[in-house]
Image (cartoon, rainbow, N blue to C red; front, side, top):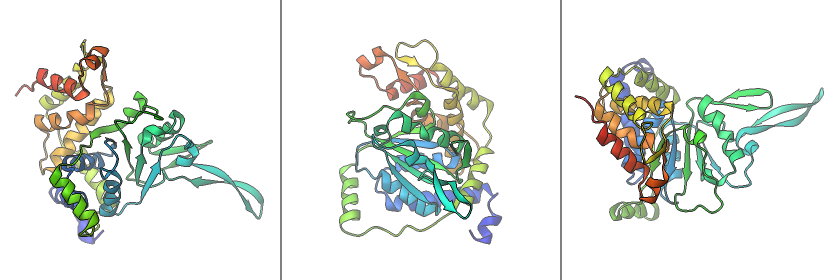
Length: 324
């Protein structure tokens, strides 16, 4: 990072522009998926983790590797399979020989990187899935009696296939709640598919250049946390979460307190990325779907009627109109 950048780390307008430059650079390497990229940027700005749900081949691995290049951060991909063990993720103690004899040394696993792609996370057993819980929430890994801190910034992007259930283990609610967003990755349009084919089979991939480093990203996070939220907007987002606990024939279990925290952080990040230093009702509405869709348990009635989580959230937003 240059001396100019270091001197400007506390300037909100300058940092918002730099983050916008990072987003544009990421879009150079990813055709379409504008909304997905924007939501992932919001998660990066708030230290949240992301669960991507979509069919294979939609560029999820490419997205994370591109983010790594733009922010100059180490990237690791972990392919989750039924035979993957927790130690394959976190690392393990190994015996090493030295002049004093044999001793134990900790061999770090792939989780010790800044950006982690947990590919097809629902293919691993619950025991292995739970190996990510501490890392995602506390940013530490405990092996035996020793706790090891992960490097910052730390970000997990996990993927799962929505249509293939054979040989999978659904993520428990406790782990789903650790994800700030659940993002649905749609299939590209014909024009976008044409661009993907041209990018990968013809023109050659564009050069992705570093725009910021980890220090800059952490400084931007600190600025996002300082964005104020008016009492009316705060009441509105809290009402959205509380509405999931009001008796509702379509909801079996409502959102956790982490939903309110995620709404606050995501709305602040959206305002920051758009160059505004106040949070609007529209910011909250825009992030409500990815924040809430994995934190609601639809009732049997809702499932039998073919209602999705997004349908339920849409109904909540219609009921809880902001009082302007």
